[in-house]
Image (tube, rainbow, N blue to C red; front, side, top):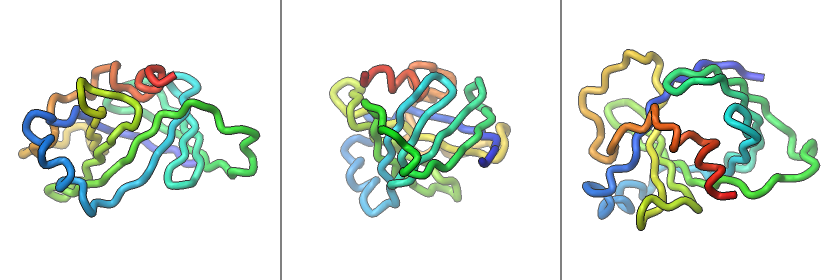
Length: 154
């Protein structure tokens, strides 16, 4: 079991300014396929790149305590469905790792939903030049919390 404090800001992708550059923005960037099953607001089963995890998070938005357990696939009696599916790309800008999540089954208007996450060491981190691909901040918007997105694919 690993316990950590997650300090994370989130944005919706800047579709207006960056949709035409999306393919070139993500091309050759490290990525991982992720599937999530949410039991509730605080607990999920995740398959990330073939490895299984159970994650339990505290309440909160910007700062949350997170417990993560690796699960042996042989210990899973079944894989629950449906699962929230996304491809997560990592883009480094000004020495910060932005995680760009492209969702498989959720639309944002006519486009697939794309969110950006930035895990930070401190909530007081000042980002002087936010990358252009970061649109409106959604850190405190519960519509974009994992469990609420998951409920939309059921």
